[in-house]
Image 1 (cartoon, rainbow, N blue to C red):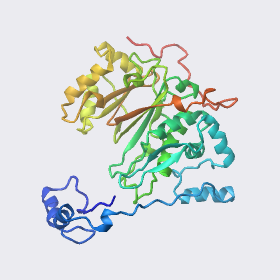
Image 2 (cartoon, one colour):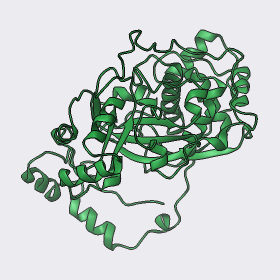
Image 3 (cartoon, one colour):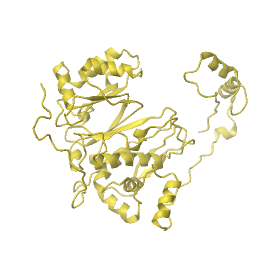
Image 4 (cartoon, rainbow, N blue to C red):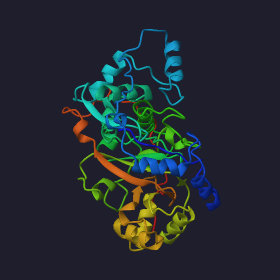
Length: 392
């Protein structure tokens, strides 16, 4: 639908009230018409015939296949067309995409979802095949495809168009964590795991290509965010957690495989101490919306249980009360257990929980499609003296 727009000068945040009053009394910087005249006209005058019958503008569709060319030229084309994250990609040849599609039983042309990085643009649909294309580009294998299809089915883009430079997070729960070799222990948030790295990157590439992300057109993040490269992608350490797994708390069964999606701005990556200190760190971040997701080592979970928080819901309720924000609710304060028990540390984020999506519907009936020798990076070795994980 056509909307009537008027624009004040920018920025409108953290400027004196006198400046804002000047905007209201001044002119639209785009049209040159007094701002309030445009507002009054938009709210009171009848719609024109053109506004009553808007023309639906459709974005041009790209060809399914590119013309054959040299590898160097194709890499240049993808980069210069803005189809990548600026890092080297695996070229999505027909053969590679066909191999990726063996990771699911779903028809390649089945529509998975629709999305847009901007609220004022057409929501574009994408198919299983298009998800597979981005999976190949990111360096994924067929075993990773069900997770990516679940993420894609949410319609939740990793890089929304916002001047405030959002970051995103992916957390996987359930049996699929081990089947595809995800890391939820030592260094879970570090670049030491293949599955974590490529799944997180593929979500970014899907956002770029499905959004689509076009700087200054659809993407307006002022500073941008380095986390966008692979979106804090990890799994939860259900085995060492003393609490119910995160997806169980959100209504799923323990044996189900799921992916949970989060979005926020800030990550305070180092914290030590009891629940009271976690609260102090959260308050110190200066974000008053009341949304927080804490990433905590299993040792921290054990300590919190000793403090009386045997259920994370109790901790959420206590923290919400102490935050004393009119926007906050217990369901907006979440806890994810991950890490290798080498230090009782936690990371505080102001990420808000968006949703949890089931992965199982995208898994082939014959099970996860793995290579004859699955690709895996070195796995963390437990302390030889057996001291790691010992606590009071």
